[in-house]
Length: 519
Image (cartoon, rainbow, N blue to C red; front, side):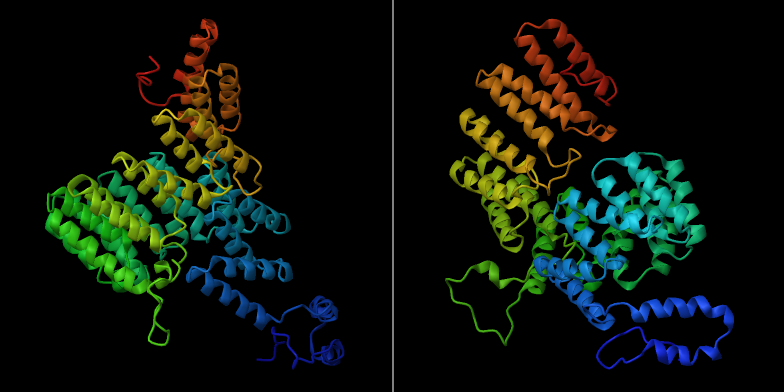
């Protein structure tokens, strides 16, 4: 094509001399181009050619999709060293850190890249997403607005800002942002879909249906199940139950039925009508299809021995896999309409498919505890703490609360200490109150009250307030901590402080009329 090849490998012998020999053929106004090329070709040779970088990035994507996150992270970390300005690598590495619960690490990666490219809309949008996940919605909004200003034709920040406004109940603002995005990106299916969600919430059903149909028109084939599921919600709101079921079944006929959201919606619709056996059939058949997809055994692989870990029969879950929610939904139904044994079997099966899913282990442990199997529940709580490691304090807190219900306050104290020590000292834990430390310190304070250590309890409640986020989303936990402080001061006979804390608790609570316990 007359240009210089971007890939630089052993067969590329371009030199600055050969380029300058042809420089007389170029207009004099291209002198800056020649200077740039000179710097490029006289620079030290990179560790990898462009072709090798591209292949490594594709390998990282494949490993991530296949569930081999360690391999993907290793490749991306290496790529980041040799290609620090490749925003694809930065964004994917940050996303993987976020999905692993390492919000602080993800934020550092994006902020470091933003210093070198302060107007990059992808980085600004990524930081907005992180702040939103951390509960810092006002900061997220500012990042989204900066991303839109940097590139008005980039649809993602419009979608993120519109859905954020929608989540706050700001229908008018959400409509304004999404319509502005559609003016710039009229064929973006995600914006059409989000607009349909806003109309659906506002009960403008015909307009919602039109927006979803526009999304269907412009969207990719793999995105159709989501549109059909949303269209089923419109039909349901119109009282067209049969049409809603047909649309949900249609969503499961695409992509081999691998649409977790549609499975849950259809099964729960049948459950709501009392069709428990039909709901059970939907869960069973869809999960069998999912397991078939996950099986890693092939005719070329020798059959495993009976003693080999059964979890090895399945490949690792891919990035973004939502099917753990299907298992939890089915188990919940069986707890209500079926038997404990059936729910227990479902959680057991889910744990083999998602061995690192902490929430599954916790819910399974809670089920066993509710039915008196204390020893197995304790083992599962311990396993959930091991899986969470130093990233999140919630499993430790829930384990301790389990022990406290059985009046094992000394055991609970030990568990809470372990969790606080692990998460507080970790560089991977979130520093914005979202690692569960606030609720852990609160539970620990309650535990110390029961042990008679009121002064230590007061210090722990103060620690809980210190690590609680300052945003509106953290108002509920602040209210709870202040309520507990008020009760503690009342027990200590410090009535003025108790009155002060209960007033602050009432001020924090966002519920109309306040919390009845506070009154």
